[in-house]
Length: 214
Image (cartoon, rainbow, N blue to C red; front, side, top):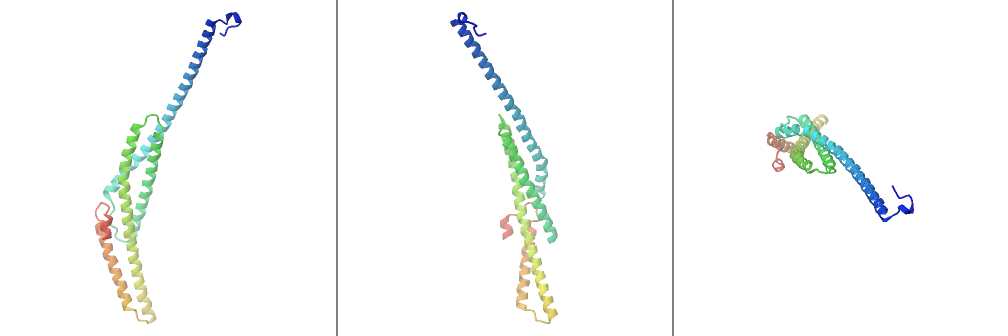
């Protein structure tokens, strides 16, 4: 469409060519913008799918976790049961951390979406429910570990007293009664404290740390 010779290279022809070039540039820019928008919204679909997946994982976990918070833990009857509860609580702790990472990753994906205000609100709602579970999990883990530790100390001390008495009797040696009395008193104190800890843990709510320390 460009003029083929100088006679056709008039001012009007130049303006016409300029208009054609401007239209061509505009079309090229529109095409680039369309490709960019298509790519952007294509990515939005991917990021939204990642957020949706994180949300599904959260809701598959949260109801059971909240039920666990409501029920709490029963007081163990012996050291073995206490250790089982401690192990269960550690698994709960691990799962809490995993779920938090999942929803955080989901939020990061949602933040890359063009419009994500609704997803931000959903994340805050999930985070609030997670925090309530996490608080209970943290409290129960510490309390059960403290109880298990107290039980272990009491058992070790009792074994030590028994061993001392057996060894002294077998060798025909006199047992130091002062040491024995001291050890027995320590066992008694640990037993009383352990019983108090178990009593305060008998409710379905994680005990107050200050109460157990009293």
